[in-house]
Amino acid sequence: MIDDKVLDSVLYMSKLQVSGEEKEKFRKQIEEILSYFKVLTGVDTENVELSAGEGIPIEDLRVDEIKDSFSLAIIKTFAADFQDGYFPVPRILEDASGGEDK
Amino acid sequence: MGQIAGKSLTELKRLLDRGEVSALEIITSFKEQYESDRKKPVPLNGYIEFFSDAEELAVKADEARKTGTSGILEGLPIAVKDNILISSRKATCGSAILQGFTAPYSSTVVERLMNEGIIPVGRTNMDEFAMGSTCEYSVYGSSKNPVNREYVTGGSSGGSAAVVASGQAPCALGSETGGSVRLPASFCGTYGFKPTYGSLSRYGLVAFGSSMDQIGVISGDPDDIALVISVASGFDSNDFTSEDVDFSALFPLKRMRLKGKKIAIPEELSGEGIDKEVGIVLERFCSWLRSEGAVPERVSMPLLKTTVAMYYIIAPAEASSNLARYDGVRYGLRDITGNNLEDLYVNTRTKGFGDEVKRRIFLGNYVLSAGYYDAYYKKAMQVRYLLKKELNRILEEYEYILSPTSPVPPFKLGSKIDNPLSMYLTDICTIFANLALLPAVSIPAGTTSDGLPVGMQLTGRMFGEKGLLRAAKTWFLKGRRGEI
Image (tube, rainbow over all chains, first blue to last red; front, side):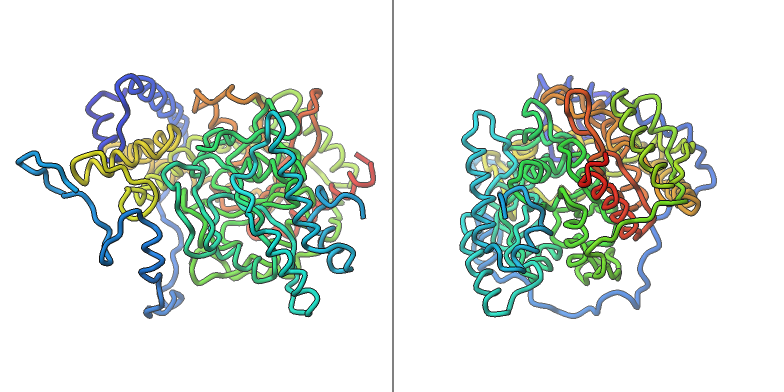
């Protein structure tokens, strides 16, 4: 039911990897769960609109005003690496020379 | 006065208010209970951490009581699930990906309780990101059922139920997305309450399935639950799904007069698929209701057969979005073994999340994908709409919906861990309340022939917490008088 292309593309979207030997077990478990979801097909939903809920009238929303947020000192405690007010990340584009990133 | 550990929050409050015990004595007693259990060959593993400064805070609470500056919960202990933030304390959601994370603020529920003097004594174990029904999917290992340590506690708030049932805390906060308070309460023999969606603020509860997430309360006494809800509920400008409800007069609970009240028992949750011994407890509970003058009636609710499918589409869809924030950049685990940003994301998340969380993120992204969205997510949301409508219609005619909390009694550790679908089906009795946003309480109603706890569940109308908790109190008082 889930071919390699679908499995790999959903894993890519999920930013996850499943190792070779675990992949078949993972696929089987997901297929079994998806197959169970078929129980929903028996419910007639033809005239049911999809709604995200009633929503909140705009006048009831809180005033759009600037409030104090976390200080840099607190944010610094979140991450192992925090420099000059920024969270450093590895480079986004591959280094053509194959050099290592910091 | 007798032993402190094992007493309810309400009893301890009375003793403290009368000056018959100090906050320090209370906290020390629960700490000793925890310490002594840790030395056992198979500890319960309910707490991830018992706060080292809890006794220090108790001393301050005793001082506040002397100077007349105390709140109504001054010096009373509460255990808190590891996904509910307490400022300056660690919060990891039972996951490797949040190791080392310290909460920068308190959840609104905890803050409101602490403003009245409550002392959070520790963080309790849970299935990773609250995804699980047994408390086995935790990076800290499984919690054990205090009634029989070879059995699961139920999940995901298994640590909270275990510490309450074993007398290591009088009361605990848990969280629910699909039954994670009621199921472990049922398996461990305590009361477990899920408020109406919106009664308690979700601010500071780590998000899993935002349209269903709700903080809940576990205790051996329904009055404890009422006390906590009376202080913690109400609108919070940090959570616009919270409601302006006033439950301040909820505590103390009065006995409920059940005479003439109609109670619906779903045929779909009381016959086929329900364990025989659970069915016997249900029948006994019905007999008690009849003896109180209530009128339990079997009612067909066919959509209840579809709730597991609905839930395991909607909750993972929301989780796949909520858990996208764990990417190794800002907080928690950071795996820098790769070469670029994509590697950072993938390696961190692959290493940091456990198998069940990975399955649910995958399922969520799958059901939201082009080509599958209509068949899965849209369909589930449409059926959810029909379910809400149907249950609200039934609750216009009936006071409560009664069912077992779980179709099966507690089972052995490890027996379902490799079969996710079988694990999901354990939730069949609880998740309809989450999908329909309704309040529900699990009541310790009996035991199996092996002495394992069996819970019965009453589900009520939107914001009908008072009636539900009063019904639970009526059962509690009956038990106290030895009449059940």
